[in-house]
Image (tube, rainbow, N blue to C red; front, side, top):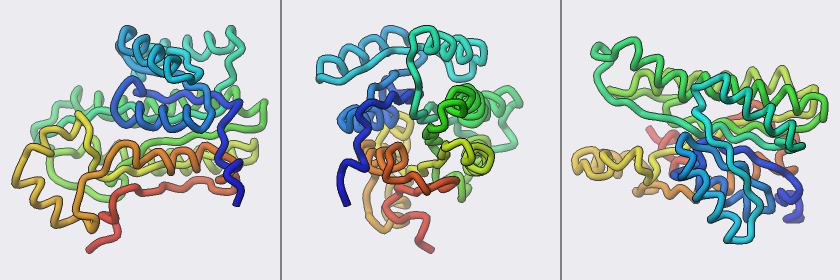
Length: 255
């Protein structure tokens, strides 16, 4: 198979939450594959710094600082892309948050914040992207799911509900937009070494439980998501649609 199938040269990828963490790793991988990156985050200074670092490494990059829960800001960002003649070919809906506490202790506002950040944002950004992709007859949408798209564990109920929703939102996008040359797929990361998981990494009891649960016997590294992301963003996956690929060291396969 020719590696040109995985070449992202000439394409523009918007990766939400890409000023750091998993989003940054995915964005860097796509940039190395040739894509122009639109870096997103809520902190304009951090976005600006990330853009500078991408450019210093020889990559094409633009910044778009907005909160993924702010619908008017999302619409304004896409309108700005239109004015600048920036056609977004690839969207990675990566931005997300976690909030841990027993389900009976969650307030409705806390529940809504997790759902809006992890699920509703993917709908709004996906919708705005698809409005532009449909006339062009091509586009790639990649939503970031989780092991929580399939499994639950205590204290993360809204996160699990949101990530379960991501799986079926991805399917809905696929069945509605495939006729327009758009694919919508998802990646389900396992337990990754990120800032969001720092408390779990440092929890000896949890870490011991996890090492006994994951067949690979280790935490995942953010750059281990890059291969799946490039595959789903490239011509190598033109007939893959509505799927979720788990990058989890085999955890979801184990009894």
